[in-house]
Image (cartoon, rainbow, N blue to C red; front, side):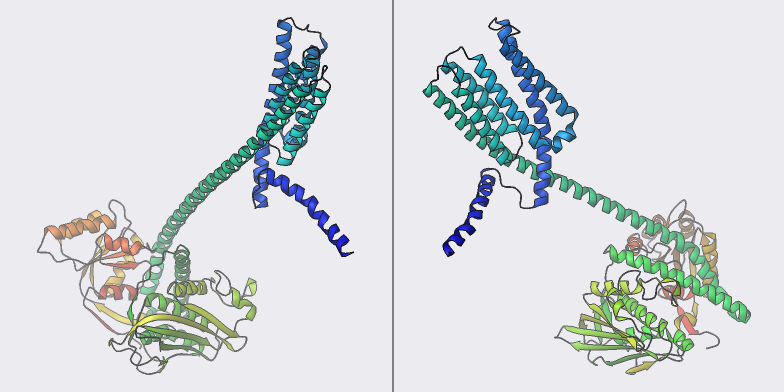
Length: 640
């Protein structure tokens, strides 16, 4: 019983082995079914051309034999053989023209139509050869039939473009047809018959080799063509991506410039208002306008930051910094908001070892992340506190691990939202019911910056309890003494210090202001006057160069985009004047521009400028920048 079952189980394997054998005899297809299907579709699409050409060749061949016999007088035009030749020639001609005219139909049914064409051709060839040579010798009849069938066999194997199995069946069919008509030849000659069969078997063998070679070549050409097309497509996509990137960069640059220029006038004018002479109602209006302008500027900066990060154009500038000072300044920035909301903002640096005085990283980017996280914490906390704690663990003699936690006692984040928290434009609150503003870009920017620095950021949260953001970065450290940190204690609270923007600056010097925009020129002049410096105005670079030749200035504030002569060219000419006049000292040139994309600062420095300040700027930012190049003093503003 077991042997019978094993035999029954083996039988299907024998039947499945036959198609595998035939596939092996043909050409192995591609392992990828989609690739094989694409190849077969393209391979057979040329087969319709074979139908047309082979039909035309067959029609011309039968017509040629009809014409030769008629001209040589061997047969009359109305002879049975001649009539059959004419009929077959006409049929092939009609078939070929039909195949050419209805290509889609014949392409869909190519295997059937091609098989019919080959079978009809084989039968017609055998029959005409048989009746044409019916009165000839057996050897002549066999030779005529052999020649016609060998030619048809080789054409089928070489050009039919069918699968291996179908091609083999057609080749064997032509062999059987030839053997059938050969057996009906009068004066049967066994030796001639055997030679005919041997020739046709050899033709099938040679045809199979031709088929293998043709298929192999076609597959190689298909892969080469596909690879070439893919390379061309990738090149085209690369060029499109580069063009889109250039267009995006140009768009961001233009929009940044066009938006920052009027915003400079708005923010500058609001910052110059003397709020002490205003009523309480007017002061609220001014504060609302100033806050809205700053929010708009913050939105613009976030979009630019995200674009830089996406384009991987952010350049880190590592420097030595005291982590204690970084924590202090991040908390201090939100002191006033914390007092207004009645929440404490504390910084805890007790876990930073005393011997670790400085770390090495891009402090500006790290401060940007901290400001973003603390801003979020303050926004979503209605009572309690926001705690920024830092811990440094020494990993070896060169590397330390910096851990920063920003914790709040706010509303918390649902667990379902934690996975999407760092996606651009995602906000936990959505729709018209949102109670907190924002773009949803801040956390995405934080994550990308921290990852660019080689660290990672994680989030823990509980609804109604609060949220903690944890930053972990491995950084080089130094025990070299740095300037005494502003953090004098381990647990820092901020209550009575004066914010930097509320400090009263006094500078001394004479400045050449180069600005073509009337509003910006007026705001900058008034701001400089309030800082105690003398100012002269030039409307473009050409005028500025001429004024610089006639008079020495302590600082040049240079706009970059101006008519007649831009700031870059003017800076180069000013440096050339200084090189020619060795008695003149180098005058600091500060770029005062709305160009704020990555690389704009470097371009300004390469053109001979010494510093860079982006529009819109406020009084404090301008004072801090000028204080690097002019004598300056600061004091608490009135009322503090």
